[in-house]
Every structure is written in C-alpha cells, then in structure tokens.
Image 1: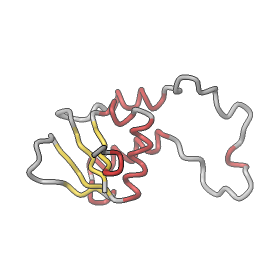
Image 2: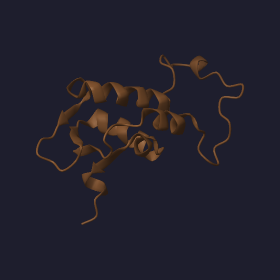
Image 3: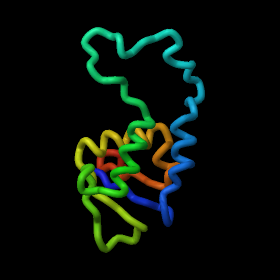
Image 4: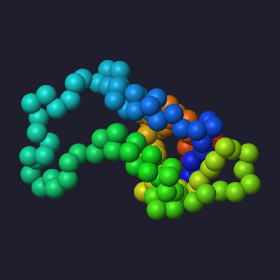
Amino acid sequence: MAVLELVSSRPDWMGALTVALTRPAGVPERRAGDDPWAAAGRAQRPRRISDDLAWLRQAFDEPSEHGLKGLEDTAAVAAWETDHEAQERLARLRDRRVLDAAGFLLHEEERIAV
C-alpha cells in the first residue's frame, strides 16, 4: 500500500507539466528517426510521462474511479490510499520529479526505513 499526499493548498498543474515536458539531464533526444508504433507486436503507443500526468489530473477530480481512496482525519491537506496500478503510475511521476512539482508526495511502505 502507498499513500498519496497533497502538500500544497492546491496542485500546481502547470509546474508539473513543465517538468514533464522537460527532457531529463543526460538523456539524449529520443525517437529521432524511430517509429515506436511500427514495432512488431506493439498494439498501443508507448507510455509517456505526460500520459501519467493526465491520469493524475483526472484522479484528483475522481479519485475512486482511478484507484485512490480518500483518507480522513489526517494532518495533510488531502491524502489517498492507492491501489497497485495507481501506485505504479505515481512512482513513475515521482521518479521524474513531476509529482513533486505538482505538490504531491508518495509514501510507500517498502521505501520507509525502519
């Protein structure tokens, strides 16, 4: 189980989009001449971080439909428990620093040192 926490009074969607659209340091320009849709056996287009950000925006408005369960009686502005699929998406957003830019933190049990 993981917990998503909103640490700002409201999400900074433009800040998150800016980070999502910025190529990470040290990563070369991608897809120069590549056609990922033409790969044999690939039916869907490749996942992009902006897809996960769009999912987060929808999940914020409709949490129960996106694998998030609201937590009551917390000191956080807002907090949600996540299901496995939501946790995977949120972890990708966290790893690219998009989650931080939006004003969220992801607390995962296995990442907490005891």
